[in-house]
Image (cartoon, rainbow, N blue to C red; front, side):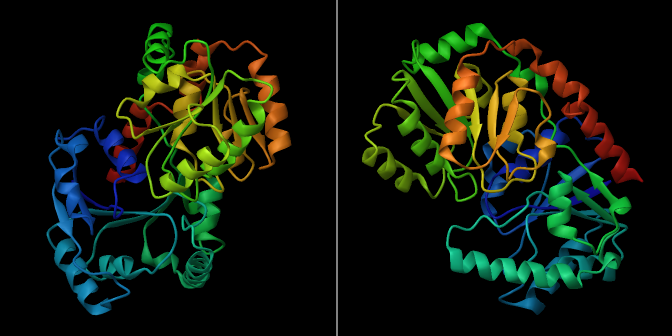
Length: 366
């Protein structure tokens, strides 16, 4: 069965979702290919173990509508059974139209977010307006399946156009065992980073408008007044790095904030943390939080994140206000945490990638 995925222009959470599931699927029965504007996907080191092809889109629908449709048609006529469209917000539905015209049996629209990751307020408002216009005119006839990572993500993309009973929630599952708490790994990483006596607050995510890292630096600036040994570990890279470096200097937090960039073995760094923080302005259902929970970390998250993300009693969901987070942090650092129990809670909640990969196989077949 040939499945064509619409990949994002960069390499991010959507690609991680696709390949982490494919690893546990029957690759003799299912073949994944990609349609993207990102030629670099062909050389992505993480994905060399998989047999797949990359179909390049040489133009965008907004720049050359007819040329774009022609290219999509050429690709789809190469014999695909399924078109799986991963999206965060609406810009158009040309692909869905072409897929239905050429007779693709299964067209999946899969919502992965709940807002628009754009730092420029004017551009963000323009994109939001376009998104809402398209959402209102999107027809249920343009796809066969409607998926979302959470009900909040479903509402954001589908609105009232798609009946709730037609929507399937696809949990952002992970390889649970990779993240299981390991005290030896914790000590090793803390020693390597000079954190032996530190209280380590941490987060994982792209340095972007969405993730709101500036809030954490402001939080640390206040928290370390009472907790001089507190440090903030940030795993991730992105367009906001220079702004964050400037903020660290302005707050006098040199040596207190570790901007470590992207790390291939995120699970090891989660072991070294004492509390996970996620002050996102919006999220679909954050994989980073699921990974942190698997590592047994207590977490504080913003109340803009879906309530479905509170899948353990060690996650606190709060408004984005420094006093509230300071109070929650005080409570968190003074309580004992049984970190080894994280795995069982998540497996019971359906976040085991092996379970979800088999569900994906079943849904592709039906």
